[in-house]
Length: 339
Image (cartoon, rainbow, N blue to C red; front, side, top):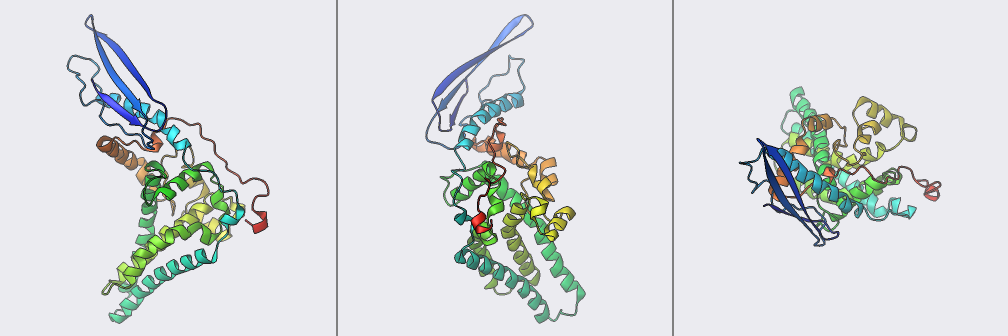
């Protein structure tokens, strides 16, 4: 007998299922009890693996992976209840989408620190007496390009984590987690936010990295360039994300060209993510890492490891495809602010 407890915040129910199989003229019965309880929880937690105490020695039903997947599917059916409760109420006031002086100041400070890091890398080459060495400058440029490539992976890992784990009650990250769920319900809102209003939330945390680096003595030029570009791309990814939700007619020509070239994530590339259960295509800088991660099922493997270790199922395991999405802004919304 194996017991699984699932806490999701719903009603209390208990069910017992029995299955009988027959082989060589005799029937073998297997029973499992599943108890579902409520504890004001916002995640699905399987306390004990269904296969941990299963005696399969006398049964023809020895497909452990199938049994485990059955548990996952049963768990997934209840995940949508949690998801439906997330995302909050859509912000109705257009004024909340307009950039403030504080938001502009924070954004300016972040990009100034990133630019200063890159500039420090160049100055470091000159001070080392390598200013005339093409290899030194090529290495600096290469570090910047590597940072751009790796930043796409960074946004994917972050996006996957907040899409699938935690809740509004999660310390520090709760607001961001809930906002990502809200974005799935109202994707148009990101297209209406002004630049600083859209990206400022990630600036303070990122400056906790860039400013100390600027004050660190002996930092290698390539490291300065890498971190300056990487941090700026992480912050700008939210704007690239916004552009990927907009029609080409709404975008500057240079942005459309960069999307067509694959330098920035495109509407088509990111649109694949916005289908329930919002699984895969998490990277939002260029999207280059998406096929690498998705084709090799790297996130799926990480989810299984986490599930086996903790019993916490990711939200993308939900089997439900019923999800109300508001794609377009209400008619005339935000016109008074030219949004």
